[in-house]
Image 1 (cartoon, rainbow, N blue to C red):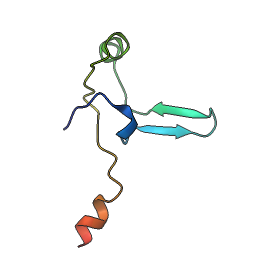
Image 2 (image 1 turned 120 degrees about the vertical axis):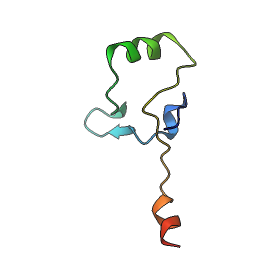
Image 3 (image 1 turned 30 degrees about the vertical axis):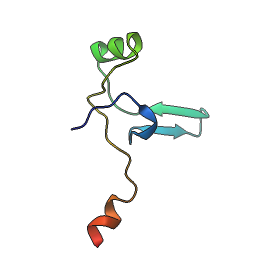
Image 4 (image 1 turned 135 degrees about the horizontal axis):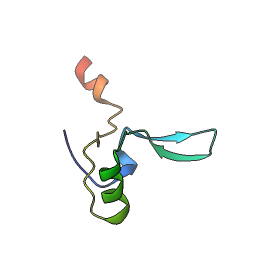
Length: 60
């Protein structure tokens, strides 16, 4: 599993149309949330690259 601090390219970072903003759907526990909120260099254990062309590459 990869770790990275940028949520913009994570598959768990999705737009919520009801609220009108992006949310993280990863289930961070209390310790992970404290580290995330207190550090700018947090490496998320749930980070997964949002690669929309992954399926296409498998079909080739």
